[in-house]
Image (cartoon, helix red, strand yellow):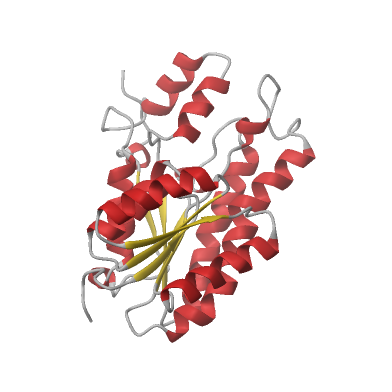
Length: 267
């Protein structure tokens, strides 16, 4: 099997910016023939699609509300019909509790139920539904079909003040494993990024009572003393999607600057 991504057809959710945009562009850079770029913000998806085309791949911008089942089904169908199939699915879209609770306490005992529901529907239910609708197309693929889910280190250890985010990302990790079992030989793996310089991260910092203290606390455990870059995560995602990772499935791959490698914090 070809180890590269040449001629692959891909669908990336949450691709209007951040990690999703970087993944979509990197897929094209590594030879994908077509990338469907999905996001709630269709204009942002259009910007990413233009970047994909600049790398030589076909692109389709799709506006999609991942809380709406019909939108998800239509997104997958549109991609498969537009490009003649689907080889790579990247379930990247995600939201965090603090995006909906500015100025409020958002711990386990105080998080509003409606915020829990939004985070659950986008971060976990939508990953399942997108996979469900994509599965028939992926099973028909003859080009090493693969799913890459974006989880988080928050799904592996507890962090304060974002209970729904952490629980749903833990769910993504386990959903990755059961998907790998149920859809084999379609491969399914997930990424567990640490603190990456995305709008979601910057918004999380901005929502904190003490931005500087929050940023210090998140970076202190890292052995690499900086925010991660979306492009670094994208390269890992593309490796997992490619034939070079043909013997890897059901794995949760941590990319966190070494934060979970030890129990300490840097001075």
